[in-house]
Image 1 (cartoon, helix red, strand yellow):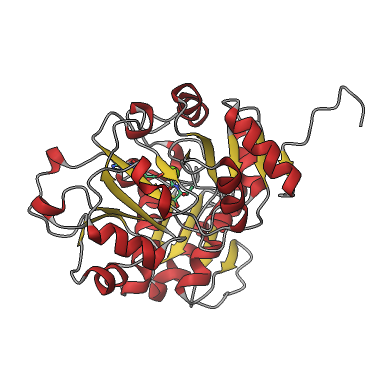
Image 2: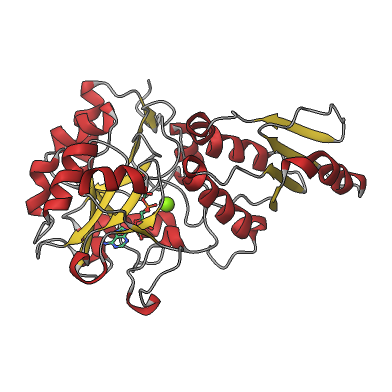
Length: 348
Ligand code: TXA
Ligand code: MG
């Protein structure tokens, strides 16, 4: 390689490259990090200047808090205060894994990470590359999903480069993310007043949580007595999020072919993401079949949406999902994708 060739942005997660990534993070740089949910854009969570770079790179408002990723639950007391026994039990049951806990913050956690709130989000990711980096780094990494604000979260290293090339120092390639949608966020910071509350659904369900703490958490968005004015800010909870640029609509399987054909008949290019409906082999429709069950559907969803978005079609039509428990987190993301699609959302 000549001296003038820029080093590769996407690198294999060798022991050397993981050490380099930790050095870059210690020097205040940003690194793309594979996790089991989606790729993160990581910075040293104790370095306010580095954390500010995350907001600039994503184009995200500075008062939106970030999740701190830890090597293991033993690090928790450095970040969280007044840790309830429920948090300890859940950490034991589901870490490493796709569960973020919102807890009272320790005083040393920078305001840049917490959005100035008195709480902090923490999780231990279940990805061997993330864990290897966190162990070498031996502290917390603040990492939101590695996409521009309001866009689809990345589930491969190439997606991260597409979103953020020129805005980060390195992307560790950990392959496609296994889960494919973001972690469950559980607020335990107001247990005494409000009980446990899920702020964002994910692979760890309310029932999974109930099985460990003996009570079912309230789920944000379901009927609630909590005053919306006092709830914490969660950008993933804005209606428009996870959005493709192409207008996206959800249509019942029974009417899928008919409605897609009507749209196409008006001279539009229509991409269809079906799940149970068979390809009608209509040349006017770009047809993709998604897995019929929830886990593989989630695993592929964001990559498929990116691919369909890149076709430059006039519409993306997605077959509606079952309204059962196992589809709830995926339905949440697709609902937001529909609201935010078409580039007209007020998040930029
Ligand atoms: O799976 C995930 O959680 C991924 C991977 C990279 O770990 N991360 C992720 O980060 O989705 P992000 O920033 O895109 O979404 C995290 C959400 C945001 O909506 C943020 O507002 C919320 O977590 N959050 C973080 N700290 C919080 C806090 N102290 N109180 C309330 N919400 C918080
Ligand atoms: Mg995000």
